[in-house]
Length: 86
Image (cartoon, rainbow, N blue to C red; front, side, top):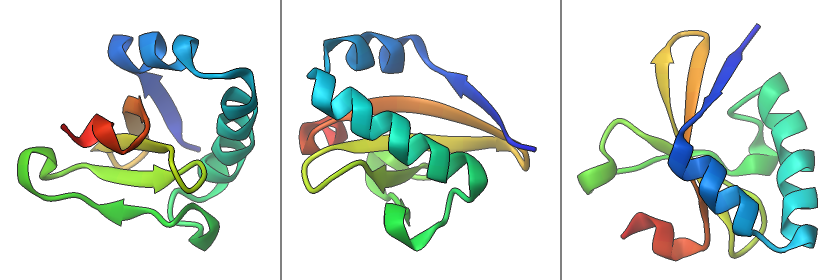
């Protein structure tokens, strides 16, 4: 069973999301908890300053960046539009 941790940055960003995007985040997290690499999430490895991290899609515009702390522990780092990569 996966254990999901949330960074304080993720929690701050999540609170500012529009209600309809929060609903989508919840739906996607249900999929994510079952399988972080489910094809519906379009999970992919990141490079550059996010080396060692992954991202998955909430919708066309919004993403969540996360990393594995251990095989079963995942830390959600940020949530937002593509500018979260900056």
